[in-house]
Image (tube, rainbow, N blue to C red; front, top):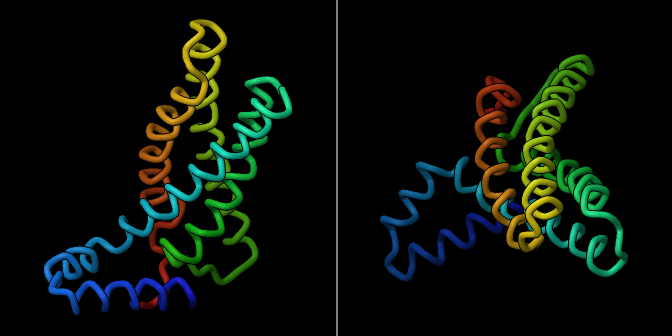
Length: 159
């Protein structure tokens, strides 16, 4: 896959400039590091969509947040499945279960995200973008735990 090739290219460059210990550490923590990279990209997708809808199109806070969540969660499922956890399922039923667990857990973290945004922005008047970033940090941590323990467990492809 292209992600594997880009990652390997970058790691070889780091090795050549004398950062072999960093490369070794990265390889030991590759799944977590990939989750951080794709989690950051998912967060970027979420925040950009939210900001466009909320600030540019004046769509309500809650509605902007839900739309941003749907697009971000879909991006996250694809990247987590194929690039982070390298999940392989052998039947359509397993795939549907995986998707159901993924979106079920994401709905739980959406509720947490929505609660933070509604309370902090709508009730307390705090800065929407700052609270969106803070809420996303909490959500990223919870989503990793759910993905690692519940969703993609024991479904890894041979590496």
